Structure formats: C-alpha cells, structure tokens
Length: 253
Ligand code: IPE
Ligand code: IPE
Ligand code: MG
Image (tube, rainbow, N blue to C red; front, side, top):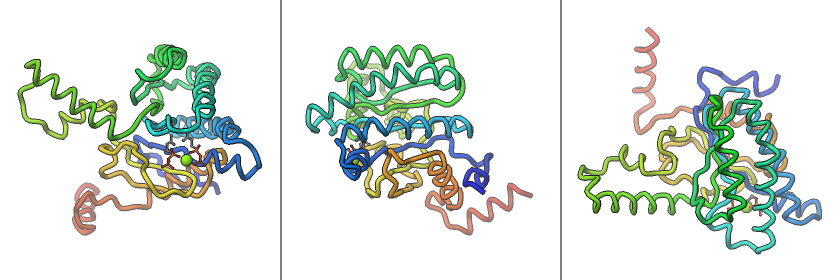
C-alpha cells in the first residue's frame, strides 16, 4: 500500500507550499557542482506538480528563489535563472495538457527581461486553465511582501482611496497572495527546521512538515507521505480538543 491510498481525498489541503531545499548538498554528496543539484531538482518539481494536480490540490506554491538568494555566487544565480528560463519553456506544454495555470509571487520587477518575459508568456498561455494553480515564488521574501503591502496601503491612504481601518482581511488583499487561501500545509525538504522568510503572514496557522530528503530526491510518494501526516493532525486554531470534538459531533449528527 502506498501513501497515496491512505490520503482522505475529501480532506485534502487546498493549498500546499513547499520550500525546495537541499540541491547543493545533494550534488556535493555526489561529488558534483551545486548547479548539477539545481538541474536535478527539476525532476522533483515535475513530480510534485503532477502529484498535486492528479490529487486535485487547488494551489501549490513553490519557493524557487528568495530575495536573499541574490547573495549567492553570480555563477550560481545565473545558472538558476537560465534553468528557470529553460524549464518555463520546456514545461509549458505539460502545464497546458494538465489544465494547470501558472502564477508568480515576489518582486518580479528585479528579474531580467528574459526571465520576466518567459514567465509572463507562460502565465498568459496557461491563464484559462481551471485545474491546479501553480505559484512560483521568485525573488520572494515574506518581509518584502509585508512591507510592499504596507507601502501600497500608505499610498492608497495618501491618494484618498482608502479611509477605513486596516483589518486582517484588508491587509491580505494587499499581499501577493490575494484571492488565495493560506496554505494548510508547508513542506520543507533537506532537514532544515526554518522558514527562511517564506509566506510569513500566511503561515500563521499552517501545519509544518519537515523531511530530511534532499529536494532532488523528492518524489510523488514523499508528497503523499506529507499529506498523510498532515491529515493525522488536529488543527485547533487556539481552541481545545474537546471543543473541536463537540463541534464534529454536532455537524455529524
Ligand atoms: C535549494 O537548494 C534551491 C535554492 C535555494 C534556489 P540549495 O541550493 O539551497 O541547496 P543547499 O541548501 O545548499 O543544500
Ligand atoms: C530557501 O532556501 C529558499 C528557497 C528554497 C528558494 P535557502 O537554502 O536559501 O535557505 P537558508 O539560507 O538555508 O535559510
Ligand atoms: Mg538551501
């Protein structure tokens, strides 16, 4: 029995976010360059996207490049960007075939014209698809996103477009993730137990799943395993376990 058979399909998380980490260590273990690790990470992306689409997950957000990743050696940054360009080109037909639409979060304005062009083209080409929404976090960081929202709120107030109090709902509307539910599950590979500036506002009540598997080794089965683990948890949102069980008894009556 694979983990897939253990998944309760009507309790599937709507939104799963992934910190794809460990490419460099994977390559080093094989005596290869870090870039070799990134190239091999593409297979894991393909598997994860396919698994999410097949199951019927609605949103999948992949952390592909953080604001802080610009601080890596230029050669590595360039390799990551050209990998992105070629993957967007190579994978768009698969996205179309599987009814997947592409979106991006992050400060896209700092990407080169070539990367931004390919990204926009892929987003436009897939915009009519109604299945899984695949969101790439590119030049993204949670603090940047929050500050960007604050600055846009400030501008709207100054322009007289906004004169109400700022609620959590209104604030969410100014984030890159507007119109998306918060992720119920966040997966991080490579055995690191940290968030690294990902979706800081949105993960307030997200279940965190950490696995030692290095990203290039991540396969469908690993994705299913994370979902099975998630489904065993009790999400209390500040309440007591007894309150939740009482509620379940009422709705199941
Ligand atoms: C994740 O793998 C890919 C990116 C951050 C772009 P890493 O490149 O961080 O791999 P490690 O963590 O050094 O092993
Ligand atoms: C997080 O991984 C960013 C991405 C996966 C794109 P990092 O490898 O950059 O995170 P740190 O530096 O280990 O925290
Ligand atoms: Mg890393």
